[in-house]
Image 1: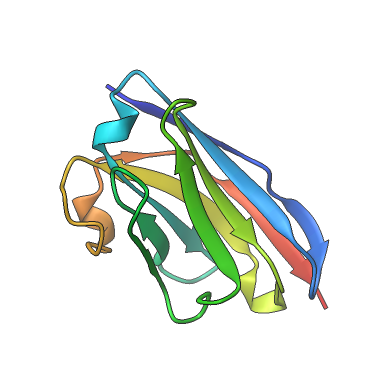
Image 2 (image 1 turned 90 degrees about the vertical axis):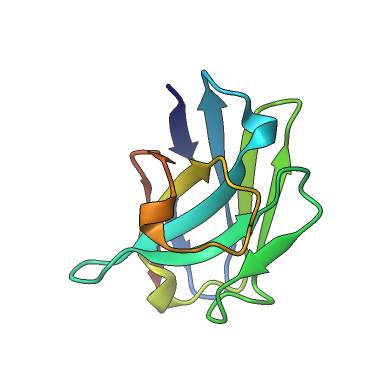
Length: 125
């Protein structure tokens, strides 16, 4: 079993920055593709970014490309999402997720085995 715990959400102004963290407990973190997803009120959960086992390959949704950066520290079992140039449309609950597949370009939510409980990000205009 694996437990994922997100932190770092909060309130930011448009154009500002936030950094999310996700600590993984109870599993070999370094052998998991990790991803960030988000869900806005009344909308389906959507892919934001994913990262390969070693952290050398990343994949981003077009809506966040150039503004968000996903990274990981396998020694600390921690996943990060640096969010810059925030927009009001980035407002959502952000979730980290893990799977044991090797393909970091898999973005379908049903392919991810483990999920955190989420952290709220609110961006004001």
